[in-house]
Image (cartoon, rainbow, N blue to C red; front, side):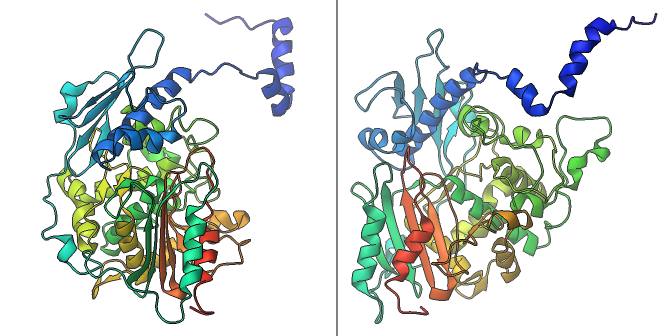
Length: 486
């Protein structure tokens, strides 16, 4: 039976609305209610759970330190160092945040796992589910790092500033890094020159062993691991990722996302819908995996393609996580994947204090969730400074380092500030060498490589509220200590 058409009288308003400019339509349909309020509350509890759990059991800091610094980042944290609506299970190395009262966000829990750091649980799991969470079974590296020479260990790591380097200017650069405006808190500063640490400084309550979260500096570690697989022929930069996109459809071969390559995602130019900004980074998207126990894989595979890959740059955690998933597929099985970062990179360059965390399903959250110390990041920077060589062995090709240092094509109109999961000196910054490049993470995590001056500079922070520590200005200050030309 044919369905009756709507009358002209009913169609007219709809046609008029359709003909309005998009801007006018959006004004008429402005939404003021926060439909994400529940998830924001859940994620806020989850942020505190992860930061508090890692602060206590990964960083070995006190509750007072955690509330003063780690949780300064959290708006209205639950409780204080003296107590509140949270539980710390010291035996199980776990925390639970919130009371779960009616009308309040659910209780969120996180638990420390050996070799991984703290893992967030979803709201429907509790401490009885901890034993099912992933764990790293590889034993620690042999030997006492205090007796092993730098850079594989910590013995003989430091040296006085060499002749020609202005020690007073270097100290002034250090003071610049530590004497920050309110809300910018420098934890550590390392300057490595000619392979040795010529300046090393820590804030009170922090030392060379203190591990803190890298945030997005983890992305530069991720691209290093992928580069090793590309060098080995097990991944390819310019071939489709080969993923099974979500949602499942009857003709997956026609999915336009099949055109996305590893280069696209590492250049932050996948063309996929971006969800980690516009006020939603702590409501949905990768935040659900970081802080709420959701799968990091399912979310990454579910974004729609809205632009041609490679044509538009937008910073998105899911782009990195898609590359990590492709790495997992290339490695072939869960155990090989879980052990690969240690065996391929961390153990080989002495990064024995670095923990790569996973979601509860065992997938690395290598877009953010890594805990390490300043010296390990200095070792990582030295690998790049030395062109991928480590004590006579090539770990990473020069071609891959060239790739990460080459501006993503889609950044041409943005100052060429981004390469392959590394940040580059923007076109409008003329006060530092053009060959410098840097990792970057929230709250001020930087490992900066300056090849022309044989320098690695590491700054770790627990900035909060007012972000924006200027890494290029730090480089400028440090270079005042060096003679012209390095």
